[in-house]
Image 1 (tube, rainbow, N blue to C red):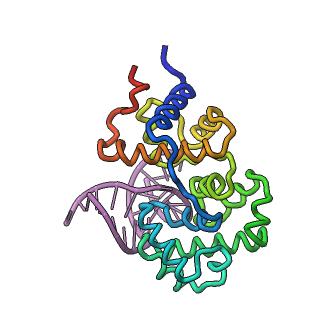
Image 2: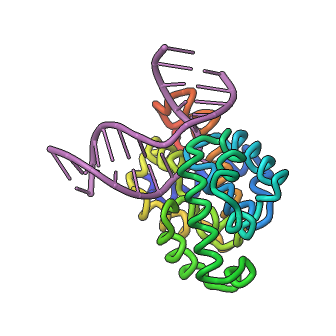
Image 3: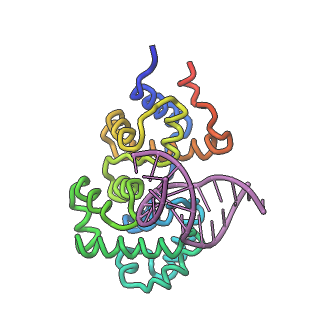
Length: 211
DNA sequence: GACCAGGTCCTTG
DNA sequence: CAAGGACATGGT
């Protein structure tokens, strides 16, 4: 009898939690999480941190400051995390959205998660992963983040579900606890960076799934 | 030098 | 709908 997708996901989550414990991941203000979520698109986090530091030094590391800044100045500050022209525009779109739709981050934080998600997906340059990252890490909602790594690990584990269904599966399995959601995604990324890239993800290396 | 990074959008078939 | 390309810098 084969293990169900839910069962496999439970095992993956348990194994990774055992392996990594609690990871320090994305501790920052809501503003910084939102900005970082855009900057980290297809980009290493270490480069994003440098950009965030540049933005801080320029006084540009907030949604309000981005809203008032010249695009050119944003571009210079975020250059080292790549795609800097398009990302500067995306940051502008996001800041315009927050300001126009809610007035402030504080107001935004009072809205229900599903409404925030729908509105974020309407912003040019924000897709599912970026929206969910903002919700989960910036606003502490129980929204699971599916990224390319999650898909890789799940595929190797023989879970055939794709993006939307995969997200539902994780959200069905995980307890309704924001810290658990944040950690589970962090664990997957750490594991994938360590094992699924260098080893080309030819086989599932999560031991509990091989027996 | 080749290849990849915590995506998203746009164009084609 | 799936596949392919553009966006760009920085690390291995």
